[in-house]
Image (cartoon, rainbow, N blue to C red; front, side, top):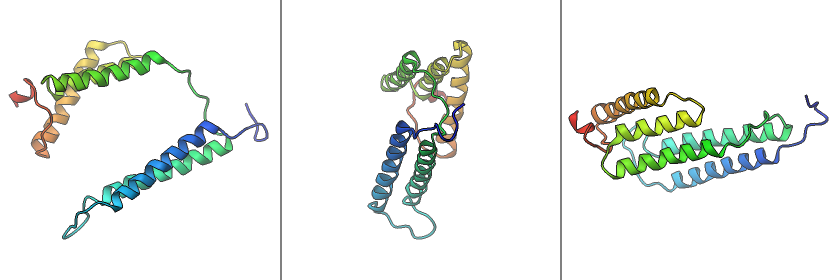
Length: 157
């Protein structure tokens, strides 16, 4: 275990902190340029400031950890996991683009991500993803009255 004297600042962690801070600053700048007056309460300008503040706090925390050298050991890079997640995202886009709908697209993305994290029960993961996709679809469509991409399954509801 490294002692306080042997720890070195983590350059990669500082770069990540800088990128988080840059994203927060862009969010603040973009939110300040938004047009839209509200007659009462908070308007749409409030949320970007809240998220930007959270990003800035994360940037500060990352920088402090990186400066102290307190980051935990990094796991090894696994290109197969990255490929599975990117493949799941590509499948989500393709399924929605071809009219398959939100629920099956979400199920495939969930199963691909679970597989990338080492789970090997693809049929169960597809079922879990479908149930989660169905719940999200109902929440957005029925409760919030916001439409998500509909396919044959979604048209049944």
